[in-house]
Length: 245
Ligand code: IPE
Ligand code: IPE
Ligand code: MG
Image (cartoon, rainbow, N blue to C red):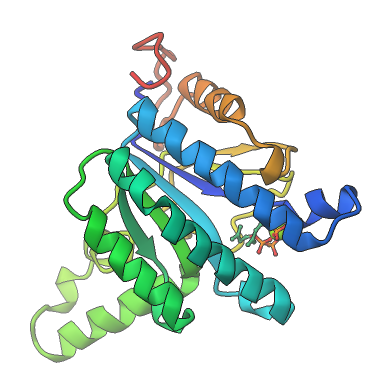
């Protein structure tokens, strides 16, 4: 099995982690942000090409106002603080999701961070912010319908490839591996189209406890799997002893 080209993580369990320690949920988010920093750096140093982190879903607006604003403040704090870390580690910053609904200060920092890291060609780091898989597909449909109405494409041009091209993740390969922490086994509206043949890795650990070693364990398990894509099985092989090829 080749090393994964794209790993996506549903960083879940911050609130439960904090509550189990008699802390407020927001404390879990503060600790979770530190874990995200460690995983991003580890990924960049390991030579993985694409990492996507699900940080805020289209449904997460329904949380208490103070939790949503804490999450936005954390984004502001870390984007400001880690701009240099991204540049020093050759990390290109991208987002998927409708950032136009985020607070103006977050939007400005996202624009600055994208601009400052645009030329970098190490890790492609994508934050899914105000992202929903159904909304992504709906958005692509609307664009395709508009193209058809303008006469730029015919009905026969509409195929899987075209739909993928109009998804917000068009600049990324489909995720090879999707990791979700905190023992929840669902997608929660993440990468619905893109996960058709993704491998899933679930761990009981909540996100604030997820370590770089846990990340390597997920990759090791992935490397031992046999992805068949609907074809007949091939003998599982390891092409390299190095986790990252
Ligand atoms: C993940 O942790 C972070 C976000 C969704 C922003 P949660 O906040 O969902 O934590 P739990 O799942 O309630 O424990
Ligand atoms: C998914 O987690 C969203 C993120 C990790 C950003 P949730 O905690 O929002 O998902 P549910 O509510 O458990 O399905
Ligand atoms: Mg959760």
